[in-house]
Structure formats: structure tokens, C-alpha cells
Amino acid sequence: MKVSKQQLHQLIQNKIHSAGLSQEHAGIVADVLVHADARGIHSHGAVRVEYYSERISKGGTNNDPHFTFEKTGPCSAVFDGDNGAGHVAAKLGMDHAIEMAKENGVAVVGVRRIGHSGALSYFVQQAAHAGMIGISVCQSDPMVVPYGGAEVYYGTNPIAFSAPAEGDDIMTFDMATTVQAWGKVLDARSRNVPIPDTWAVDSEGNNTTDPFAVSGLLPIAGPKGYGLMMMVDILSGVLLGLPFGKHVSSMYHDLSAGRELGQLHIVLNPSYFTNEVTFRKHISQVMKELNEIKPAPGVKQVLYPGQGSHMREIENEKNGIDIVDDIYQYLISDDIYQRSYDHKDPFAS
Image (cartoon, rainbow, N blue to C red; front, side):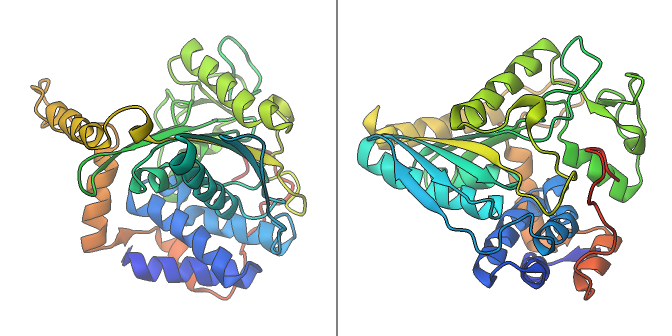
């Protein structure tokens, strides 16, 4: 069914607040989740609310975190999230990074000891809307079979980038280093539809189209994706003194314990490198020229990275966001959660 962006935000905020977060923090979580659903990234939207609510209610997300921010140099800092909601810590960490980049041209802020933070595109767009280039990487549950291996080691370890163009236009790119994010499998499960056989493998290491049979995801482009997820894990885990690789906490193992995850924000101020007006003009030119490229047979138009998501966002603002009926029924219910994710394996249904 379709619901308005405002209605979806209120439903999510109400549920997250009922689970134990303050209205302010629940509102930020709702901001990030609605951002994802509006852009058609349903794997990081309302489908996550029941899991978040259970973890909050069981104490695995600190509902009264003591956030600290420590500048370690002119352009570097560490934001400690005290295992609060990852969405909130990541947003506040990016706010700090933007202010540092305004002053010094470059900012690198490690956000440590947080929970799952949702779609990274939200945070890099904070930077772009402030006239900056935003880059963000974060680690995640070990659920990916490394190239040439038969057991999981790294997470989906996403990377996101956003840059400002002229006016209010921005260009945003957000990707997992797997063929698809784990949330896409969750979305397929919620819709009871098969997945492409290039996404994941079953317990025997065979490619599978059954989302319920998945026991390992595949890296994008084989060894290249494998190398990228290694890089992300070092930048958002090892660099911040946090668990890494297969030692990263499982999303479902113990919902009463903090996740201790890491994320790294990098913000660049274009005015420290070139003329800011020219920079924005050239980003707009790139977007326009990509759209004007002759399309291949069967393709209507070449889109710049992230344009499809932006087009869906505009459409959904106008016509409402499509939400699975079961998820909507959960959101309007009085239940904090209706099924437990606690102490399941990383591929819990």
C-alpha cells in the first residue's frame, strides 16, 4: 500500500519512541529510514523498524547515550556513539565533519561504537547540501564469502559519495561492496519473491535464487569487490580500534548487547581546491552530459549515478511511498515487535 512521506515518518518515529528512544532520536532514525524508502531503497527503510525496536527495547541500543566528540588534529576527530542509535551518531558525526571542513578544507571523522546506521546516502547528502563533497564508509556483519572462499568473513561494507551541483542539485552514489546489500534479501523475503542467482550462495556454496536459503553474499566484481570491502573494513574498523572482519558483531546474535560498529566520514570543501562556483557548474555539466550520451539499444536514457533513486524520490513525494502491507500493519499496531530476531544467525528470517 502507499502512504505519504509524512505519515510514514510519523509511524516510524512513534514505533521507535515506543521502543525506548527519545522523540528527538526516534525522529532522526525515522528521517534516515524514510529517506531510504522514498528513494526506493526499501532494504534500508521501514523493513528495519521491527528489528530496531526489538534491539532498543532489550537494551542493545543505548536509549540515553553519552556522546563525545574529540578533535585529534585540525582535520581529524573521533565521535563516540556510546552504542546509541547509529543513525543519530552518524548524523551528528557528519555535522561535526561539515563544520571542520568549512574551517580547514578537509575533515575526517571516525564515528565509533554505534549501531546500524541505515542508508549512507543520507549522511553524504548532508555534506552535499552544505556545499561539500561527502564520502562515508562503514563496516557491517560478516556475511560475505570472500573471493575464492567458502566461508563468510567481511560484511557488505558500503561506500557512499555525494557532491553539490548548481542550485539545489546534488549527485549521490551509494553502494554495497557486494552484488546486493543484505537488506535487499530481507526485502525479497518480506515480499516473498526470488532473488537473482548472482546475489548469494546457499550453505553448500551454490548460487541460489531462494532468499530464505541464503547463507553468504557475493562480492561485486569478484576480487575487486573483495578488495574494496577489505579497504572499508580497515577504514571503519581497524583504524578506529574496533572489531574487524569476522569479529564484527552479528546484527542478530544478542540484541541486549551494543554492536560496537564503526563508520568513517570524509568531507572536502571544494573552495579549498578550486573555485566553488566553477566546481558546482562542472558537476551540473557532468550530470547533463551523461544524460545526453547516446543510449544503448533498449535503453531509454543514460542516467548519472544515483539519478534513478532521485527520480523515485520525486515520484514518491508526489504519489506516496509503497510499503508492504505486513510492515504497515506492524507499524500501526501497539506491538514493539511481533517476532523475535534475537539470537538468530546472521541470516535470520
